[in-house]
Image: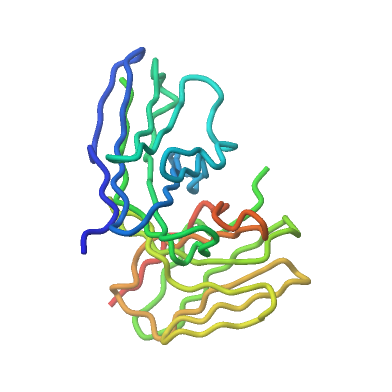
Length: 116
Length: 113
């Protein structure tokens, strides 16, 4: 039973490039959450998605960031025109259903984005 | 504005002794609290949780205490083991948006053999 799979594990981008982070939820999970951890900080909520729907994107920067969870395939977090301040670890979590307490959310190993 | 605060960046204890990790919060709307454990290069792993209607929850060597009036919770690990060495995050969620976790900055626990 594979856990939450994130790829790539490490991603290096030059300033101005695009970064695409992928997250495959656990089998049977239809809810995906993205969190960002800046250096020396805790994880910060970015966005909550269900299949083909964005439920809550209140934690996501208004510009350059977007997220999707298509009917088929992984969830994608896209960062356009990356800047050095985007360097962080990005974690994805998934849970089985609506209203599930966060105890049922499992985290992936994260993607560490470095912008040079 | 940090709503969940872990004021101790690190803690070192001897194997077999008690580890006490502390967490304070400011948001009165938080009604559910969780502790996560994180090893380097891995994602957070759920450890234990407590609802605001309780003041204690125990699971094996781990006990979480909640003091709502003080807006304070703590995680006790007894006895501490070297494998417990990790970063521990306190997190909280509000009723109505229980999917959204607010995390503290974490405390690095080192258990010395």
